[in-house]
Length: 193
Image (cartoon, rainbow, N blue to C red; front, side, top):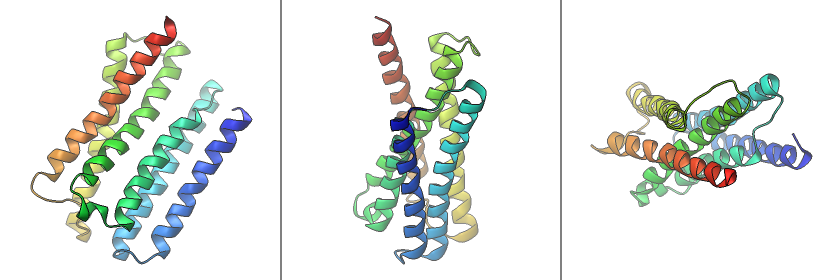
């Protein structure tokens, strides 16, 4: 990893630590809910560390800094929405959070699959490559949606909203990865020309 990439990654990972501290110390919501939100930040930062460690160990390459930037941006958007009560003020904030969260998952998956493809570890057509990235990213976001549902069942955290909240969340959870696949493939095509 070049020095600039390393510095940017460490700054962004530090932002997750700061966020977890804010979420646990500042009394902006019920403590159970604050713990759940802190766990989201821990999981997101941890997912990057695990993914980056895996590609470093296996392929001697690091994920680019913009991967953790996109993840940090989506986690901070969610946190700001909670701190400033934007989820209740603006009905579209939840859609934005799900779109950005799923987009960040897709950016990780896309970059890992791209490394595997470039190194010859997978040989997929562009269609299959895109389908796998989309499928894995959407699967992860469906699992997250299940945590919202079960969190509400067990702890009454009120993370699942109105009647169509889950349907809307899943739609935006699909649009984020779809955008990553379309833009990523377009950029790769331009790079080849």
